[in-house]
Length: 55
Image 1 (cartoon, rainbow, N blue to C red):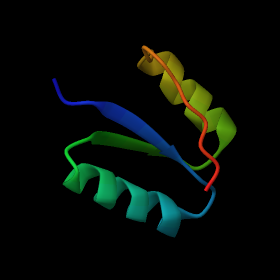
Image 2: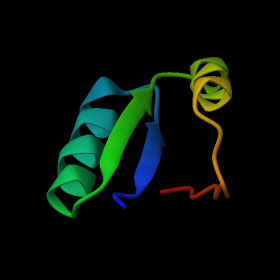
Image 3: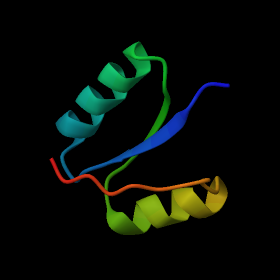
């Protein structure tokens, strides 16, 4: 099963970079530009677990 992750940042260059790197590593990646958008995406596709990582 391919792991799915959500990249969230208000800078589209950062989310694009994260999406490409994580996809290269085998992840299925969605992106969001804000916390609200991330919450809406989470409601669309519930997570088993979530982690907050500040880069």
